Amino acid sequence: MRVWLIIIRLAAFLLLFSIVGCVLALTFGTTLVPADGILGYAHYPTGRVFGNLYLLDLARQVNVRIAVGISNYAPLAWSRDGTQLAFADTDGEDLELYVLDLTQQRPDGRQGRALTNNDEQDAFPAWSPDGSQIVFQAFRNGRSDLYVLNVDDGQERAVVSDQDYEYAPAWSPDGKFIAFASIPPERGYGLYVLSLDTLRIQYIADLPGASLMAWSPDSTQFVFAPTSRAGLYHVDIGSQQVTPLSTDLHSDEGNGFAVWSPDGTRIALVSDHEGGSWIYILNADGSDVRRVTSGEGYSASPAWFP
Image (cartoon, rainbow, N blue to C red; front, side):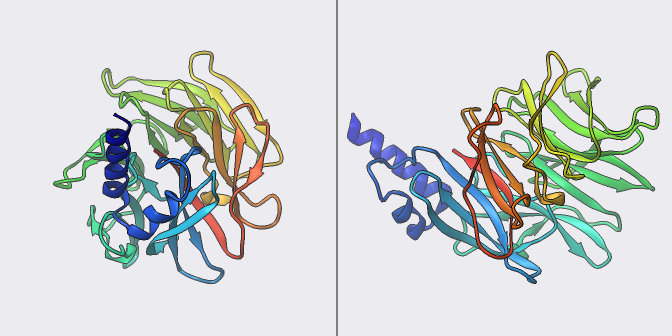
């Protein structure tokens, strides 16, 4: 039975990354699945327009490059299984959405498949849990609204278009909701949730400025980091209570959005509070902060697997 479990884990790992060097590096230890999971992230060398994607085995500190030529228009959106990357990039004078298959041999972000093609600005993509759809911020007719498109055929539809300005959408892990930030003129910055069953929009909390948020794995909580560098916050959806987790850690402009570990016990965040733009990990209650990346340039867009 143990032999079959090992074979299944190895097959899943090979399917996910399709990079022999990565598999060899990450399996250098007593188990095939790293104890702390794998952190995917982008790194952009100083002065470079394009960066690279890496996988980091947190337990063993093994770092493996898996893709090159990744645009620095943040944030990047990893699919839930880590096999695809969605991002915005320039196409003439506008931004379009692209998707990159990370299972291909030596993937190049500049060869990503175009998902949108228009004269408007499309940004902030976020995947549905099953990887079939992407929600994004779309500028249409002078407005910023939220659209959902099918990854296979590119068909798109508006899902939120009755507020003043919507941005930074995030699909809940259970697939039932889309969270987003908005700026209604009567409230200022706020966090909202759209129910995909009822299409009703619920106000959750005020935000201290423009913010990027992330769902907890159980779809009951958020963390968000304002781009004004006002710290890191936790929001409970049920009580709508906002709790500061750290005033020292703060977002590094658009690259600083936080993500949860798969078990919901920890959070990863890009911060520049120590001078460099690096990824930090802390417990979900804000304790035990440690840095896991280093070097010149800046890190961005962390994603935790499995």
